[in-house]
Length: 118
Ligand SMILES: [Zn+2]
Image 1 (cartoon, protein in one colour):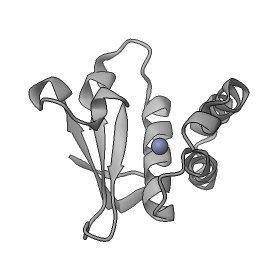
Image 2: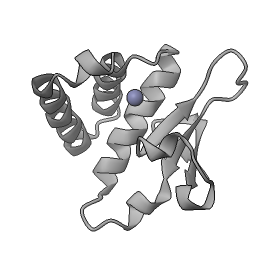
Image 3: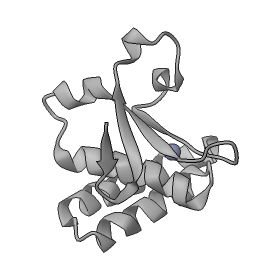
Image 4: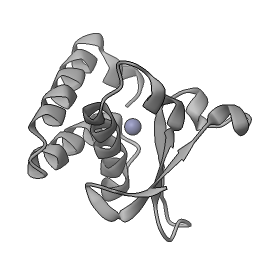
C-alpha cells in the first residue's frame, strides 16, 4: 500500500487477483473504490503488472491518474476519467506519462472504445 503520488490523500493498494477469487480485476488492471458509502476512496491495482517486462513507471502513473480522476470526478465515465487523468499528469509535470496517456486516449477514440464503455 502506498499514497497515490498524484494525490497523497488517496491510497493505492496492490493485490494479486489470483489470491482473491473473482474481482473487478478480472476485467481491468485497476479500479477505483469511491461513492457515498466510502469515507476514504482508494485505488486497487493488479500487482502482477509490476512484474511485466513492458510495464514502466509511466504506465503505472497513467493508471493511477485515470483511477484518481474517477475518484475526483465521482464518475464512472471512462472518457471523462481519461481526459481528467491527462490533466493530472500534465499538472504534475510528468511529461512522458502524459504523452503515453495521450496516445492511449487517441487509440481509444479511434477504436470507438468510449461508445461501448461510456
Ligand atoms: Zn476507468
